[in-house]
Amino acid sequence: MFQQTFKNLDDIMFQEPGCNTELDYVEQSSWMLFLKYLDDQEQERAVEAQLTDTAYNFLFHERFRWSEWAAPKTAEGKPDLDRTRIGGDLVEFVNNALMPYLRGFSQSATAPDTIEYKIGEIFTEVRNKFQNGYMLRDALGLIDQLTFGSQEQKHELSDLYETRIKNMGNGGRNGGQYYTPRPLIRAMIAVTDPQLGETIYDGAAGSAGFLCEAFDHLRPRVKTPDDLQTLERRTFYGKEQAPLAYVIGLMNMILHGIPAPNYLRTDTLADRIADIEERDRYNIILANPPFGTNKNKQLQQNFPIKSSESAYMFMQHFIESLKAGGRAAIVIKNTFLSNTDNASVALRKLLLTDCHLHTILDCPGGTFLGAGVKTVVLFFERGRKSRDIWYYQLNPGRNMGKTNPLNDADLAEFVALQKTFAVGDKSWIVNALTLDPATFDLSVKNPSAPEEAPLRDPAQIIADMLDRDAETAGILDTIRGML
Image (cartoon, rainbow, N blue to C red; front, side, top):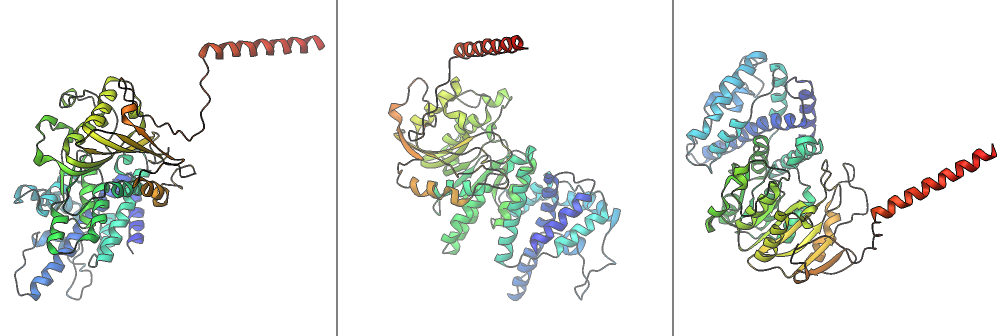
């Protein structure tokens, strides 16, 4: 039912003038889904309170509850056409009454870790883009058909929401920043092996894929109500600067079962690295930080290793944000391993001397759909120097793309072999003490792979070209003489 509803929603938004991209589809369906999801939870809790003869305080005033403005019903449970807003009246109510009311929650909430505060944050960033009130009415009607009462329904919804995020990323352009392939995330989690009670952080969280997958990894280990409180309230922490990415990530975490995520909309790089204290550090960091030039000179001054590359600033932030003995898995461009600029060399040295870099996963081209760069995943622990570094060269044996994306089976061997750092055709070990101290070059050089032919000297290439030109001229002269 969820899948067909999403398809029908997309068909409506395709015709809506205010919705032009996959990003719009996700944003607009998100705020409606969120309000319906909250209303179902509210109704469920109200019934529970009634059974125990206790009062229940609803989050929203009556006129702003889903069951009042989005889908009013008669006493028989049928649509109440007399109270149903349509057309311009509906758009005016949503834009000028509902949205301002919801934004006000961030001011009235008692604390940032409450659902009230998260509601205010979401609707501070979200705008209704439906211009046609009749299409908005049709969209609300579709959403109203969904119910989120059972765990199976919630699980199905979270899975389909993940699919929407994936499709948004596959659409290219700025959508790609929101989606890291989930099989890769699951492999990173398997290696770092989070334990219940440990804190998990992503300072470039985007759609919160790392945090949601880590939640799914730990949820089966919950045995007591206190375990559940720890998992939901004191385990996952994230930051994100981009408004839409933040809203999608917050929604994703809530739909996965984290009721009031410790997820902040902020510029992670604006925090001075020198100000990070022990209370700010985490047991595990999982991240795929954005790469590209950050031209903000003031931000660059926050870091000991000066660089305009965003990923390099994030790497310094992550290293400093790890507790002693903490574990990290970070995605980064493979050029980081060999670049000879001062910042790259200094950052590699920091990683090797302040941390135990124990595993480098070399990902094939096409791992990240819509991104033309090759990446590696760095696995390290903070608190002791690097010694042996285990490399694994991932080779699924096919061209990667939208029709052949990365899957869990592709990474099964990596996860299995990494447990013992086994050496084979795709894996090898490099001793950190053998690295060139002038460059700390960490390039992926599989000793089992056939050696590539050495590049020819440019002078030799030019000489060969001149020889061929002379040979061609001689042949042409011979042909002319025969005519």
